[in-house]
Image (cartoon, rainbow, N blue to C red; front, side):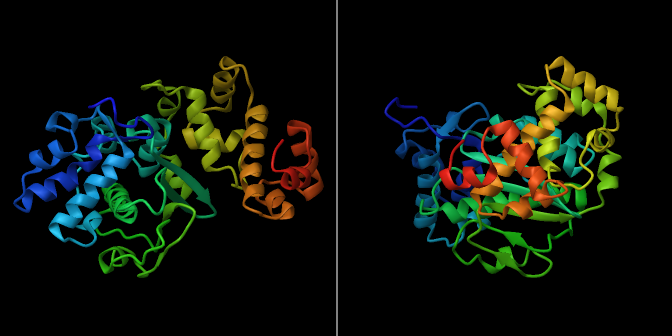
Length: 329
């Protein structure tokens, strides 16, 4: 790739493969198109990254040349994982549950490129597959990229939940009304737009997930992932769960509390320290979202707001209210 191209953020080049294939299958020369962007077919592989701006520009160009609305939907083929990093594809096929797979994805964001982020949240009886991109909402083809990303995630979830599974609804960051094809992918025909980020809700029994998780997923050191990182991701996922604690996390991984304690000791920390740190980080996020201090205290499991305030100030040096006023620690 020419050195004149911008370098950050970078997009996994495989992600334009569905759009290139759609263009080719429509009777156009995809090699000629790539050459116009100083790219070759050799650039479309798992170990190559293309600037995000170029990805969206290529998608926009394909859409314009084919005069095809909603190219993000049209180009996405069910059960086609050729545009996903092969390591993720392999793990998808070997995982026992969607929690296992998305836990792995959260631990290995580098495989997605630097412009995308996928993570898990849990609230009450729902999991949420959250996703976002670093591109701005006014970027050409932004909504098409989000449609494509959402459908790919739904296809991955159907691998575990059945081909006929539909989420109750969908949440998208795009402010453009989605096409009927997207609306029809939900059980309630509801899609909420203009959200902070995209997310897909999944109603599931937590016990059924925990039964399929095992200690090997915690201690595995695949790629750049450490056991500490995996623990942090699990804690972040359940940061607002009423039962969050050492016993709860040990049950999630199907191991003893001593195993968790030993892993944390090897990394020079302990469970209480890591819980406090991540609760405070989550509290900062909620403060920035203008959630009331009372609500934050309740969501993080404190008996009352004063206990939360003391804990926050003890670890961060300022009270939650002062942080909110000043905007910094």
